[in-house]
Length: 264
Length: 233
Image: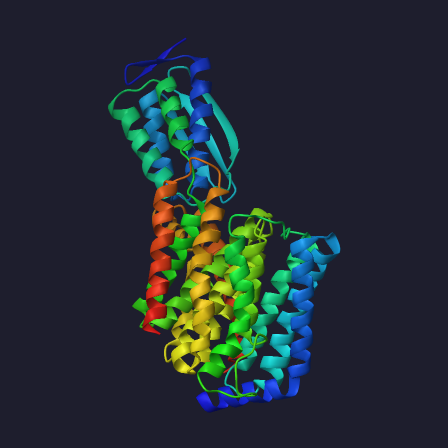
């Protein structure tokens, strides 16, 4: 009992192993914040390279994968939970490249699996480095919006406090909506201290101190998904991003009500 | 703006000098007990003191005597955040106030530095009550920093980054309010920032990216930029 797709024989057992692997592959990609059409395209390419047909349905929390072989007259369907990984552009690029490598170099399942394990086992980012870079990025935003050196410095340290609060709360598994509200409040209240100094650009410091929280990736992915026809998950992602933006607005509004109600 | 600032300091000093002396006496006793006989009650007492002194700055200094300044309520909220950081530490028993030998001499210097505030003011020709004292916000932040440095086995990092933020505020105040005394906090905070972040870096798991060397270069670069800004101020 064997089929030949792209000259590659597939047995029933082998097909199930491929299904296991593709399930893991697509859950990692969706979890890392890759937009749906790319996940579907890469998974199909990988399936074709390994000798099976792949169909995928995605939603916000789960994905349904069907792997089949016409020759074997066999289909295997499974529902996969999407794990919540941090957004990773690196996984996005590496795992996409892996599907091309499997396709171009006709890699075997074992080779693809080994490479996948290598790519996903890369060490994470240093939290101190991330803390500094996020703070520097926000200070740069402050400059781009016209902030002076003191506004930039205040934004730098205010972001550092807000981001450290976020890291600490997330480590303690606090609900992420609450994390966003608290982090936005802490960062903006610290940045508002610039108002007391009479700095002309203090309001820019206040406004840019929460930019590190803006959910850019879900917003972009939501729009791409909708334009690519994945309406359901696109709307889910946009609603999720919208909720986070509302949380940022709540955190910042608390600060504005306390210190500068004329801005609200 | 400068006049309002210095008038509020003068009113605060004239009305609360006895309370300020009491706070300083309690701080001295708790510091000495922690230094020579670090008992559990002294560690808890120090955290309670940190909460009390933060609330004192928030409500007495900023809310009562600094009310005439613009946005003094912002500072009240900020010092309430500082109190919250110490309260969280007290409830979770996070920092240990445990002895750590390496940076103790530096800690001693910082613990003594708040006393330099009135001395610098007098050298500038100012007279009581219009002088800086160890119970002004920057001097209190410096004392907290000294405690973190002298007992840095496991520190309250929330309190530290709030102090770092305050040091940035202090830097900008040097020129705006003509208060060069605040340069003491800023100067003490930059090496502390390097030390505490390097400690934090060393406590991270091995093998993370980018390399430890790169992150160290980043920390030193940011410290150098902050030092440059202090020079500008």
